Image (cartoon, rainbow, N blue to C red; front, side):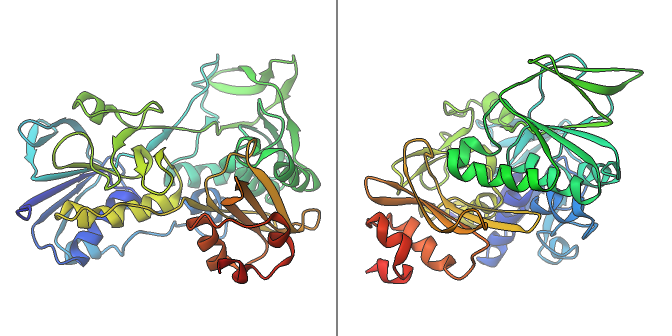
Length: 407
C-alpha cells in the first residue's frame, strides 16, 4: 500500500490527538491536519468531573504539550467546524474550502443528551462535556445551594461527590433503582448508594423528570413524575451521551444499531481509507465476537494510538478490553471488561461494607469483567483474567492467590 501524502483527522479530542501523535511516533512525515470545533488544545476528559470540580486543579491533563503540534508539524486547527465529508472526491469541507485527504480518521466524539421536557433551555440547566463546562460548573457548587442532578451514572455520581465536598445540598434523580444500576447490578450499585447517602446525598429513584419549573430564564424547581417538586438553584443533566455521527451518516458510511459508525476489527469504516475511533466507533471486537461501542477515556486514547498503524497500511485488530476508573469521596475504583450484571454471576472478594473489595462477573465460568475498589495490588492480574477470559471456580476468586489462577 502506498503511504498517504496527507492524513486528515476530524476531531480534536483525546482520540484524534492520540492518532496524530502516534502517526509521528511511527515515523510518518507526510501532512497531518487535525481539525475540530473545540477552542482549547486537545485534553483528556476525566479531570472535568473529578479534579476540576473538586477544586484540585484548574486544568485538565493535556494530551500533548502546547509546543508539540508545531514541533511535530501537525496542522492543528481549533474552533473550526467540518461541514461535510466527501468520500468520492476525498475531501472535507471546511468553511467552504475543500481540504483533500488520502486517509481520513473520524474522531468526532459524543455530545451529552438532553431531556425533552419543558424548561430545557433555562440558563441554569447545565450539561458537562467540555472544559469550559467544568470550570463554569465549579463556580456554582457552593455551600448551601440546592443542586439537582438528573442521572445517577458515573458523571452524575462524580458531580454529586464534588458538590457535597463544597457543601452544596445534592439530590440525584434517576428512573432506575440504584445509582450505576445498569452497569453494576443490584449488589454492587448498593455500595455506591450507601456511600453517597453517608455523605448526605438524597436519592429520588424510580422516577423521572416532567418539567423544569422557573421564570425569567432560570429554573427554580424540578418536577418529578411522582408529583414531587425539588427546589433547584442549579440542575445538572447527566443522562448519557449520543455519538456525533452526522458527518459519517451524511457521507453514507454504515451505522450500527446503537447509532455509532460501523468499523471492523482494524477500525476501518465501510468506505475505503476512512477510519473511525473513540466514542463514535461501533467496533467489531475480535475477542468478544460482537460489535461494541465504548465511551470511556481509555478507549478513546487507545483506539486513537492504535489506528495510526492501520492508517499507514497495517491491518492490526484492536483487541483491548474496555477500562475505566472513578473516584468518589474516599472510594477509588477501576473496572476492566464488559459485564452483563443481570445475567452474569457476581463473585465478591473482600469487604463490600468496608468498601475494599474486588467484584468479578463470570459467564459460563469465565471472567468477563473485574472491578477493584480501594484495592490496588492486583491490577495486572485482573487485566489478564479479563483479557484471557480465564475459566475459574468462583470460590478460588474469593480465597486463592489471584496470580496463581493464571495457570
